Image (cartoon, rainbow, N blue to C red; front, side, top):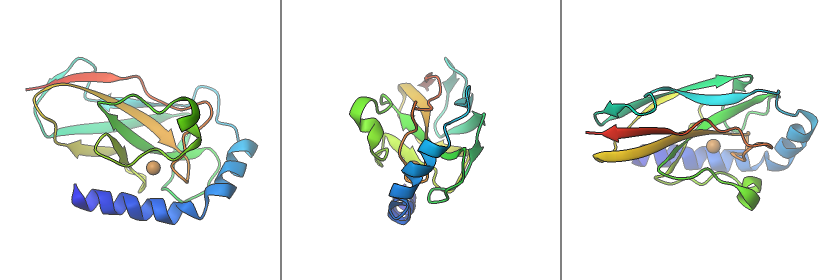
Length: 147
Ligand SMILES: [Cu+2]
C-alpha cells in the first residue's frame, strides 16, 4: 500500500502541469454518449474472501495513463466505502487516500485487502489531471460481503 501511495503521488505531481490544458481538452472533446465504467468482478451481492481482486471495465472511451492527454480517454479510480465526489468537488482532482485509489498507470484491475463485513466498490473516471468529467463517469455501486 505504501508503494501504491507514492506512485499515485508521483502521477499526481506529474499530472499537475497538465491541469489547464486538460480542462481545455475536455471542453473541446465532450465524452461520448453512453460512456461508462463498470465493475466486471466481483459481482454485486457477492460473498468473497480478502484479498479481493477487482476487475475494471470501460465502454465508450479508452484508458490512458494520468498525465497523458488524449481525447476521449481517462483512467480509473476505485472508490471503496465512500460516495463518489459530487457538486463542487467535481471541479477538483479525486482525493488520494484509503477510500480513493488511483490507477494512473492505466491499470484495469487491482487486488485489495478488506476487513470482514459489507463493503461498497465503485469506479470513477478521471482525466489526465485526475479531475472527474462532466457529467461524471461513474460505475454502478457494487456491494460485497467479505468473509
Ligand atoms: Cu487519478
